[in-house]
Amino acid sequence: MQHYFSDAPTTRGTNNPSPFRGRRGVIFFSVSGWRDANGHFDMWDGVRGEIRYSEYFARSTTVTLWQHVIIRSKEIQRADGVCTAVYQMEGV
Image 1 (cartoon, rainbow, N blue to C red):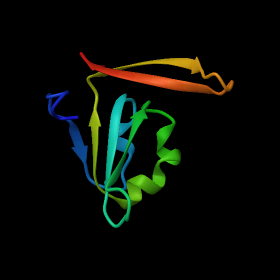
Image 2 (cartoon, rainbow, N blue to C red):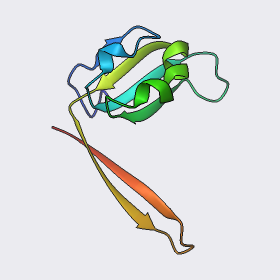
Image 3 (cartoon, one colour):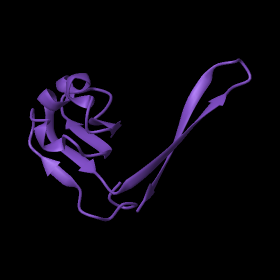
Image 4 (cartoon, one colour):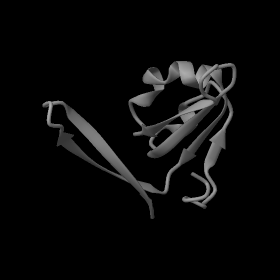
């Protein structure tokens, strides 16, 4: 992310979602102790994520939010009828 979106991300401590209220972007939770990953990326809308991601905030050593990202989405329907959302990110 830092390679493609070079502006300084907003980084906060753990277990405190309040600094992220009202902000939008791509969020990264850095988590240690998992066997198969070292964190979780997701899209953050600044409103509904606090409860949904409360476990990530509690377990994260750092939380980073890239705000200057445009996220475009579209739904596609596969041949088997399953709808999938496709997301594309670009810096502003």
